[in-house]
Image (cartoon, rainbow, N blue to C red; front, side, top):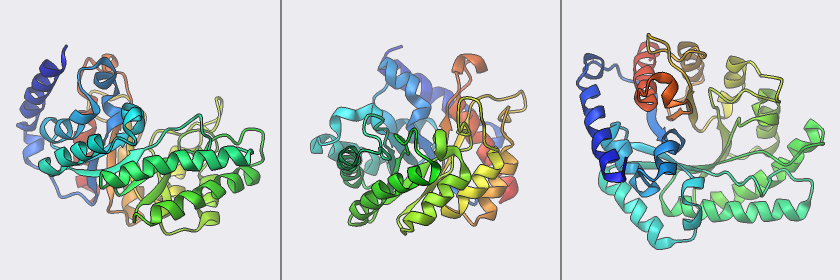
Length: 303
């Protein structure tokens, strides 16, 4: 499917879904909803859509007025001011809020034992903080990595050093720096909470993800404990979804329990839809729309 056909067919399908009764009777939500670009990785990678199309897709296809970019999808545009200006203008014209850029720079580890690498990592992240500022984003998401072979305390101290640099840089732009539980030690709730206490900066917080619970290849952290431990520091929430049952529920996550934890923490910010599943496994149903309906239904019930 080419880009034009993808945009047209997606809009028609979503509009039809929005005429269903469940869309016409929505309870007020305690949070704001956003869409993570990772949900659309397949059409982006195939060329059916581009990063520049993202605000339009979010607004016109899914009826979502806030977006979370992934730097992987416009890596060569980080310093392209004309591109960033046009992207911001498109979002502004649509009334879409640019919430964050999710930064994945695995080759520049934030918790490397090598000081020169940590400095280089910070410098590379500064570029994306600048790009996020140009887009009018509220913040950026970063990862904890590169600490292999170090104790938990040592890894935390290495990461805190980089986070402090990023905090100082982002503060000038009045932006937040968020750390997602994204595997490894970052998916250990107690460890990431310790990092937050150590860094102790107003503009540094967590981005609790409902799905990333793998501390190692063989160990999973308790999903609900993890979210509960990270919520006191949360500046955003990532509503991960992978599979759905016949009732439209996430097959492996208790969304009512998760959203209750989020609400009880007093959170009222953005909850980002991040569909990470295989569309073929759910009979080509739209994972984004299924997640949106789930958030609206369950979120309305616990509000």
